[in-house]
Length: 166
Image 1 (spheres, rainbow, N blue to C red):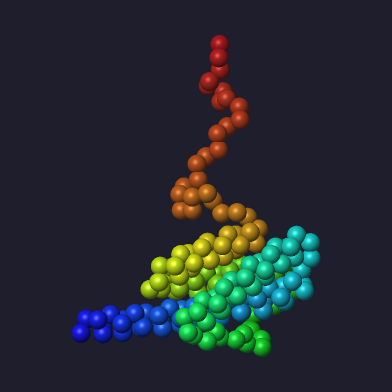
Image 2: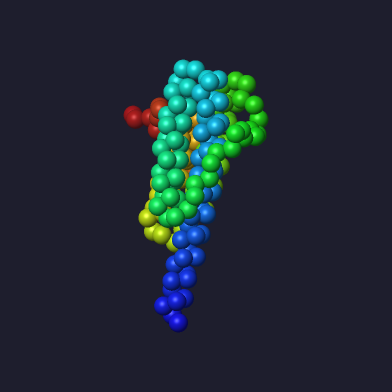
């Protein structure tokens, strides 16, 4: 009886993993759609970052499709169009949309990080790390080195008046 249960549990885990992979794939499809739009509306260094993000998401999409197929699943196809939370009418809004996209992709991979298969958990962790790093590359200011920690006062460049050497 325990052998049957083990086989059923493994099959259920595989099916659950495929569903998690499909959700991550759907997030990649949405990101590719939006980055395609951003690529057409940006220029200069911002466009270079958008193009690099597009290429990274396309590679992840292809990997996810292969993972799903290898596990006997059918990859989700992209929608014809996706609703954007706002229209990126300038560079600031384009960067803000890119941050929003990466946050959504990170959330999709967070679910995949709970996969039964250890290799998929590692894959999800790496994908989240990359998405968060891309997200911060689009932000106008970099975060503190240790978020949540109090910022230490910067040392004074000149000695204070009471520390004269005499």
